Length: 60
Image 1 (cartoon, rainbow, N blue to C red):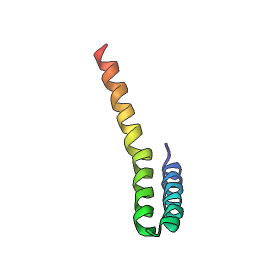
Image 2: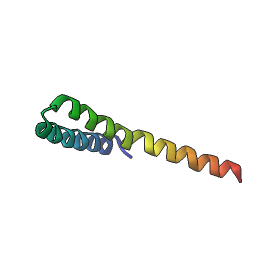
Image 3: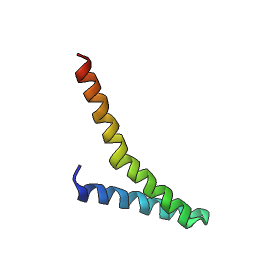
Image 4: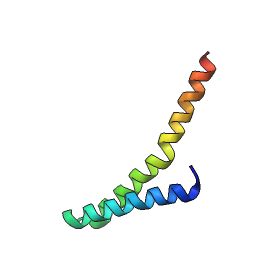
């Protein structure tokens, strides 16, 4: 995933968190939750997927 795609994804999740925060009156908390979820989706899920594939490949 390119850096521009990662930034776009994190931004979208941040905006979703902002809109949720507007409804529940905790704007900052939900914005940070959205950014954190975007970070997990863009970095950690692909990282663990790659590690799993490497382990599976090395086990053969």
